[in-house]
Length: 145
Image (tube, rainbow, N blue to C red):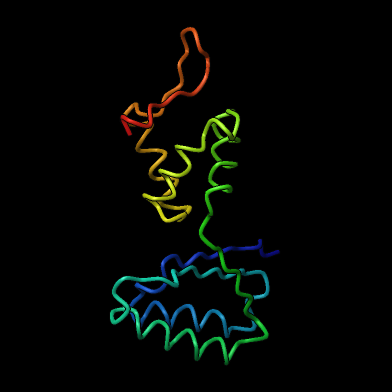
């Protein structure tokens, strides 16, 4: 028996022609009954000229395989969503995180990937840290950040 398989093609807007052809071949192969293909891409790219061939390919493939494709758009987070995320992540009251949420929104435009990187960077730089002695909670100084 064949086990289910997931193949992830990440950042497809940067894919070369051969990679796009492989994805399209797999998409059209009717013998692949237990394979889930996932392709990710960003809608907002700074150098649109470089990704034009991907978007042309995407339009054609969506028309050809529309019964097999499902699009899930992930939007950027807004300040209240960032605040809620931080509250869950840091186990702090959301009201106490308004300044940090605003700052992260300004620096990441609500992009979840960039937000995760920024939080990781703040921890690495010890600007966002867990105080084990005394407070026993996450702390930061907005001025230092």
